[in-house]
Every structure is written in structure tokens, then in C-alpha cells.
Length: 158
Ligand SMILES: [Zn+2]
Image (tube, rainbow, N blue to C red; front, side, top):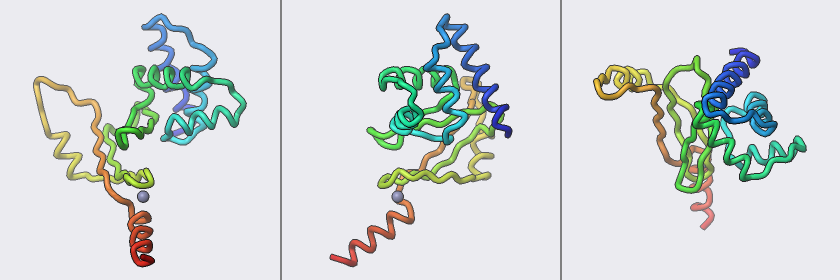
């Protein structure tokens, strides 16, 4: 996937949403859109906040929160809750597979992607007249190998 292509996909989605809702395309919204294509695929609000601070772009935390939420409604971002206090956002590109598998470490928050064809087939075979699936996301919460090793080491010390 070319970077340029990604940006135009997201930009189109944002313009369409703003037009539908009669909202303005503010400099903050454009800056966030721009940041999404330059920034890593997944981020927390804190990550994005420090990214803007480093690039000397003035955006209040409230505005950032509001715009991230707006991007979620526009289908540009998807929120993943790691725990009750911790969430991260992920950019949604339209031409990608409709599935997402992640292993999330409850200690360090590290996320590892994995695939499971058998599970995907099983979910895709599910049919319902009352529901049209659009995407699915499977998150397995646990402790990563790195954290397990650290825990073992600390146990040995005591
Ligand atoms: Zn960990």
C-alpha cells in the first residue's frame, strides 16, 4: 500500500463525513489527518499529544480528544480498549482485510498481531439475516514473554 494512496483514502472519508454533518475542515482536523499518515499505525492520545508538541503544533488536549472521537465516527480510527483506563487508536484503511487479531500484554501494553485462518473461516461462515458483519476484532489479554521473564527473574531475587 502506497503512503500517498492511504492519505487520499482517509482524506476522502473525512471530507465526506464533514460535508454530511455540515462541519468545518479546521486546521486541527487537517493536522490530525496528516499526522495519521506520518505517525505509527497505532497510538494512544498521549502519543499523539507529544507528537504535536514536538512538531510545535498547538492543539489543546480537549480539541485532540474531540477530533479523535470525530475521526472514529467518520470511520477513520478505531478504538481498542486495553483495560478500563487504557485505550489505543488504530487507523482503518478501507482496502484491508476485515479482521484483526491481537495479543495484548496487560503489564507493558505491548500488542502483537497474529493471524488465525481457521478462526477467520469460522467467523465468516456465520450467517445471520439480522446482522451484517463489517469487521471483527479478537483481543487476547495476557502477559507477554518479556514480562513473564522479568517476573521470573524478580521472583528468583527474593
Ligand atoms: Zn509485557
